[in-house]
Image 1: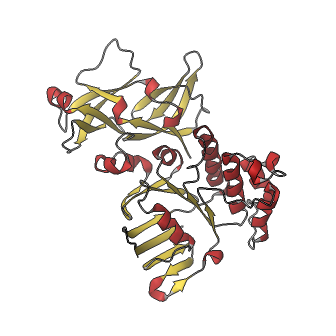
Image 2 (image 1 turned 180 degrees about the vertical axis):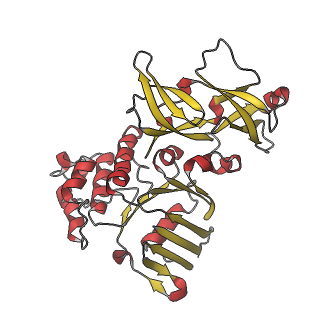
Image 3 (image 1 turned 180 degrees about the horizontal axis):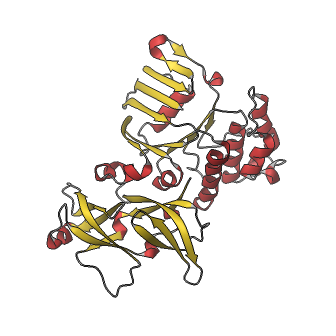
Length: 363
């Protein structure tokens, strides 16, 4: 488990955060570029010493400025994956991986050369040089090298920022396996909400160096007051679901959750697997009466429990359908329908509005 409290004064802004990360989980530091996320993990890694603070991993105190405790980076047993792979160009891939093993003083039977090569699917790359690898392949090797140092905590700073969009899903799968198969604790820095929804067990929302919220992804994404920080374009609810069935004829997947069944196009995911569904507010519409003779496959009855109080021409509405759902309507529609907290409404969501990128893995 990671516990920290950090304060540091930069010219541009001040870092002032405290949060915890459970063992064997992925905790995401989410925020816009320049919000202070990288500065925070640099302090965790020991690359930057804060003005004041406390960092504890497990039973070991890595930093306590009140007692003048400061463990140097090389003794913290933390792995760090940067935005660029930083592989040694003169070594082949096997040599890059073995460099990590040479530094290893604590053997973990689950983290071996063979197991890491297998998980990351990099055996065909072992004799090649970094210059002959794609960006995604380099990052997989960088992850493997960091793991072979036997870290008790893995820090990942925007690891997919330079990766082609088509390869990101592949790398995300490998990161999920690190947590699920190795029980590794990961701090994952990102400004991509899709990455956070897919990976994170916990989300720490950072803005201007300060923690604005901390909690599970579903909870944070359902808060209307945080939409300016989580991103208005992608704002919406995140539902925890389970794959119930797949209709090959119509290429439709049925996902069960607290409020019933959600139908989405494609997917063909393993039956019984747990996934998060990101339902964007801009894809949800509202009616006062139950719709009839409609092409919409997802219709849920619910009660309005919260309404955004901004002065914008568009209004976000939080609806309890058994799980939180968020709809975005124009102010004109809001006024004409007479919507208010306590109103009973029917929400409608097209199955085609939810693509594979809107579905995230979940343990």
